[in-house]
Amino acid sequence: MNHFKKVAIFLFFAGVTCTSLQAQVHDKSWKSITEMPEGKWFASAEAKAIAENVLLYQRNIGGWAKNIQMQKTLSDEEKKELIKLKSDMHDITTDNGATYQEMVFLSKMYRQVPDERYKKAFLLGLDYILEAQYDNGGWPQFYPLKKGYYTHITYNDDSMVNILNVLKEIKDKTDFYSIQPSEETIAKVALSFNKGIDCIVNTQYKQNGVLTSWCAQHDAKTLQPAKARAYELPSLSGKESAKIVLLLMSIENPSQEVITAVNSAVVWFEKVKINGLREDRILNAEGKIMDKKMVPDANAPAIWVRFMELDDNKPFFSDRDGIKKYALSEIGSERRNGYAWYTNEPKEVVKQYDKWKKKIQL
Image (cartoon, rainbow, N blue to C red; front, side):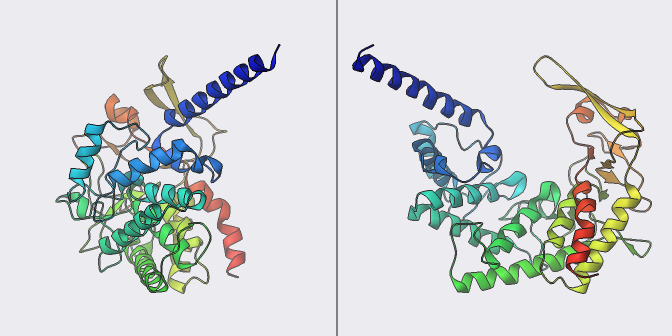
């Protein structure tokens, strides 16, 4: 084989490999792309193209809308529309990872490619987070505020925990984010973080005088558990409460209030865990969930239900009619199969608890 043929074959396979890698990335969800390990890919032409989309989607106030697959190629017309939307103040949020994920991505980009536009966009996102915080320390689901349950302090899908984790890394001056703001901004971030932790402590629900856990959302004025969508009723959350406690456990030199909050939540997690029950999923040929069933299994690891009654921790479920049912099988297939009713997230809290106690010398 002559030299030119070898070169041609090499270039062909190199092109196939690059195309394959690109397809692999573009087949990923936006969330999974933002979670990719830091490294050379974030200096690639593909990553830079995605970063241009992220910059386009950012609104002038600093935040982003949710449920956008930022990696999708944009037409010239779509780009023009996004430029027109820059000053639009609607649907800007931290729900479903929005704003948080874009900031993570920009930080990973900036570490490889120190483009000042990435830094500016990241810091604008940080300003947005600081501006969106309530005086009581909580964050709404949307800012500027959107009428309805969106004004509640939102723990749902870890929205507020994601925000506080950003602030914690910045105030602690870790290397997690490649972009560091000014000392003046870091001071604001530290104040904002402390207010957020105070809000968490103040919203921990007392059941018959005993601290337990949190609801997925709390009223911004009364701080009490609040209703969101029709099937998301005031309750104690086995899911969202887990990430809240892990955040509290990550605080260096925690206050007595934080220590009490963690201890109380762990006692509650142990009290409400469910043993001997397994979730089985029936899938179709495309891998879509067609049915979920809860099956007795003595060997199944502990699980927790997502919603529990405020007064006695009784698990419940509901359809879009908002009527409580006390078995998953009692609700229709659409909600039964299209929502995460059980979780194992608290297992990480239980796993880390003894280590945490030793660390703070309880």
